[in-house]
Image (cartoon, rainbow, N blue to C red; front, side):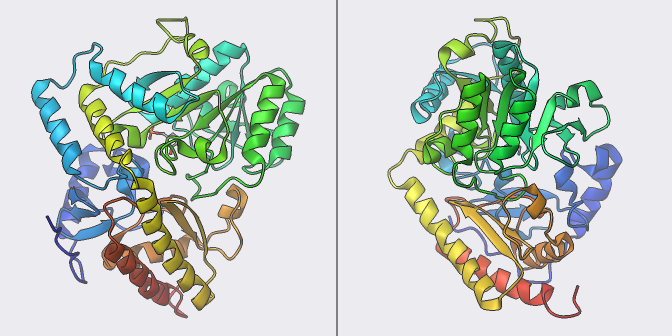
Length: 443
Ligand code: PMP
């Protein structure tokens, strides 16, 4: 099936606009997750209707090349026929039993085979649940309370992860959201990404008190920021030395940058890995896992409580299993990375050729264009980005049939469904959009 071509300019968004108006009457802020409100780019958010392959279609029938991919899960693009067939079949067999099925064993086996640092896994329904539970487990296993996290890394919205740093290194967290008790936020130590010295300092100050360091091995929630040099190795060494656990949040990177996740790329063995997104194939699944003896602290094997009515949901397990089956095919990642490299090279040529104040960071099928001339290696440098210019760029791209994440601080996700033509079209759209947003007097 060849999906329809994106609609030419100008696009009408009248149905989207009307639906968003209705949404605002009944949904908080018109959305169920803040970034969907387009707050970072302004304007009225689109309401989506359906997807097919590399494209999403809004309520007005406009088609866009999709680089959001539901924020990461859709590595195969929309409506992959194997995933659709499996979910349809399972829906007819039963959508939820609240009891264990063979499907959970099958998906767990696939995960354990892919990530040798995981011997036992626990499925949950969102990344937030997984990181929150992993931290509870780390606190219970170590008998310590502090957690070190990195500025600009996102680990879901559990209270412990909603704290932000003040100035200075290893600052005690202050709540980043009303409703987070100061007493909880104070147990979170925020340090800059790619800064091992800051981690050393935190451990020097709180030796024997830190339960865990949690890190996105390739940061992708401040835009894409790869780890530099020995950073991840240092985290492993410092945590081992002090008896703290290393929690790798691979919710985005797991099965994305390689079948074995970022930990396989960098050869770092965390104590607990957190997965999500791709392992659910677009349905709500996340997981945490690690060594059997550590995971055995979780109920019912151990005393650390954690449960879920829909955990290991059969529809979601089927979508995840089918997705991983496709990823296991020989050449899958080579092909995805080759295509992604074509996009990255095309964009690189544009940036070099135009001498534009834009920096690109990329790892495999993850990339971000930062609207800043300075290299981006942590949250501080990412914040130099000209977010107003990014917003203008976002809308220019949308007009040209390309849907980018509606925020400067997000990753673009290339999927296996994008064709070489789609990616070349995206480079062309970028060229035209740059011309508009960098033309004198436009901004
Ligand atoms: N960790 C990371 C690295 C994430 O990117 C996200 C969500 N984007 C989460 C955790 C939270 O996952 P969820 O939105 O499923 O709660």
